[in-house]
Length: 533
Image 1 (cartoon, rainbow, N blue to C red):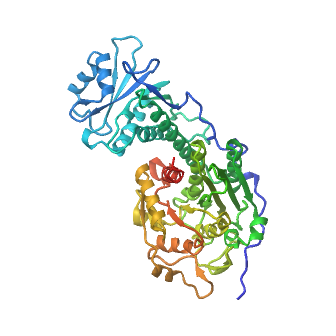
Image 2 (cartoon, helix red, strand yellow):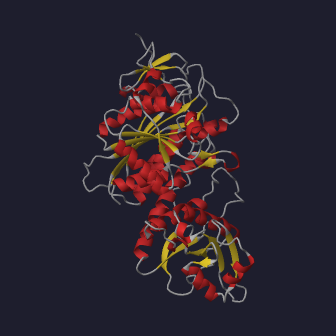
Image 3 (tube, helix red, strand yellow):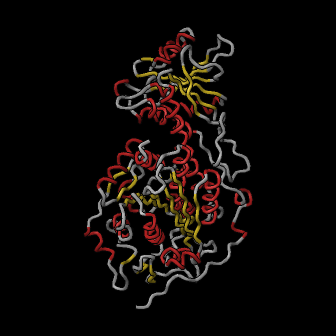
């Protein structure tokens, strides 16, 4: 059998495809200055808030039960909080907010009273919702400094450190805005500095939790920024430059494989996807050595980096195609997780691998029926050029064997079928390894970034059989997300492997259109537990 490898060199990039405002510099997400959205701990020993704060955020439960911080605030305001409860019976409902102004005292802070529902039912979901609601209320006030006491409300089986991390992450998320492509962003709210309340005995735990939460929030910020950038700016080369900028800032190892190097390795499946684009494909490798033993087996995260997906010759419908700039959110999320891990200084070795290409139609594009050779030597019949994510991931999964990984997790906006199965709530989780699957499921539960395990039965592999190659790249409509994962499994037999299909969770459509930052919280929690941090 004769096959035609994708060896044709990509055309030179066109200068008309880039926006001069941001393309010449790294993405606007590499700094997070103290005093502008910074989250720290402060000991609350006296009246609320701490000296110098413009606003204090305190909690109230259903039925008018005040938190300890709210009780102190009520005393300090001569009963203003109590009076508010008499006039508003909805105070205390989950996520409800009420602004209380102490006009009788010059320079007194504004109080944001936030509902936490019933005290005995308090959990992390309620706290996350309340924190988000409080931040929305703060945007109208535009304070410079906020005293935040919701983190003192700790649910059962949770620690002060965990709750401080959750609140700090939610605060960081809530004040995110994307303005890289706007001349002026009138809707953006300047993040105030936050001080999380604590006692002397809990200060260390709260400080550590705040640092963790902000690191994860910063990782999500990077993921969102990359996802939200348009395809004419965020190209494979832009992702490579982002990785290089991260390597310089955080002292990481970095390598970017170009067309010639990938061709030498036999990555003709990956190259077949990007050969019709003027933007050359890249394979990006970013390494963090945080373990005490530099030879410790690394955790490897592989992220799908299709920076724009037209579907190729199997062209997508025009309506909604603009959202295909989000087809690189797998890449964005593993880069965001790397940022979080290095900012937390986790004691483990972590490697991020991003296969990246742009899937375009052209005279030299892959056609349905073409056969390509993967790096593993297995041949693939391309029945649908819009099933391109698996074609770049399979070569990356073969490539990472050289690292002798402890575990490999690939992350991809892989299938619309996963949205049909799970909607926009849970990420699809596939793995033949029960222990690894359990780790990821628990990480999702703990971080409120949930996943649901899907099957990988051998019978599904039957759908990938081809008369003309070792396998086809699609298995037909039935169980589309499962057969896509089964395809990847054929390239991940040398190590412990899991696949996360984030097609339904990586971005929001409609009025709230934009990257979600998921599954950075799940992945960050996973590597934290691996690092025993």
